[in-house]
Image 1 (tube, rainbow, N blue to C red):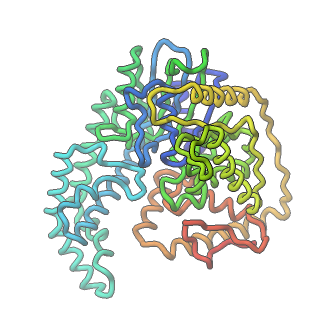
Image 2: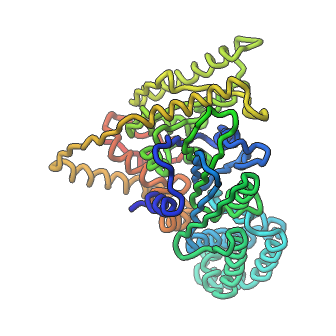
Length: 497
């Protein structure tokens, strides 16, 4: 069973999704406006929940179940303790390594903030006073690290000193691990404080909270899920929030499940390939809402990759596209543009993207009733045009949820399949050998840890095994190798049938 299925079963046991609600999956680049739209849908702008920033904010996938209920409840899946320990160990070792290199005491706390891929933000969980204590312990540890590094240098004089810091920390035993243990104990203390005694365990643990008062309930959700200091959101793997959360401007009787995903391209290295972590949601959702900024639609590459991935996998009929921040569009040939002028400008950009994808072999036909435009996100409340567009999106999701789905059984030529898979595996191994050969050993180590902790469906930086393997079995020999985009895949490792 996949990680996704395990989490869904755990949540369903304590917080089942009401039957027959349409499921809408939100997809979009960081900063496209997904979380702002959810604020408006929930009527929680005043309480500033969920958090919105110009950095990656949504890390844990979050379901918002808007339905008629007398109470509000939230169920969160706490990460396994072993996974959190690995994150903390990674951050601490990196901070010590940097200090050993630059000897800048003022940078230690900054280097303790988060993992390099921003998946785990430790600074949310540590007070300034506690971080200062850890900083001082790192400074005190430095002479011992120097001594161990010098021993390795004497034995291996041809290697760089920085290579030996990791080995030195392992050799130091309790002198190092006691610092790591102190951080873990502080994180556990914070988790138990917020979760009414529930702490991290060896496997996933589901924590629940319910309330009949919305303001108090949202305050608790912020403690659990906000992207800000004093939230335990780094410890949350998945969240499900239920209740009568509909904003008053939504159409009467609106009930829907909205799943907020993390941004497509928080890391530019991800933009070249669409992450496989979204695939289960494509399958489970009734509608997929791709959100793009009107003024910069598809520029980052994440949206274009999403379009291609959705249609390649046969989910094109589920796709809806919402262009946000329409009011920021400035058509070059109009001094006083109307909304119609702005829409025309955006549509021209969309046409260019679809033409580009067609040249790459992906013919995409977007339904006219599946394209929407939204402005005024920065303003408080919702104007009439915005209300109309959002309600139209939800109505379309409801229509799509009523369609009957059928399974099309694939037919395989088993005589050819074995040889084809062997060749695909060979090409995949060549690709990853080329990628790994060009990476620092610490990056490779971090990648291995991600695979161990989170499973192959996740990935790390430029490494996305499922997506990459799919390319090896779907790219045909047309004399064109797959475009590696910004992922910097070596030419020698390019796939070509």
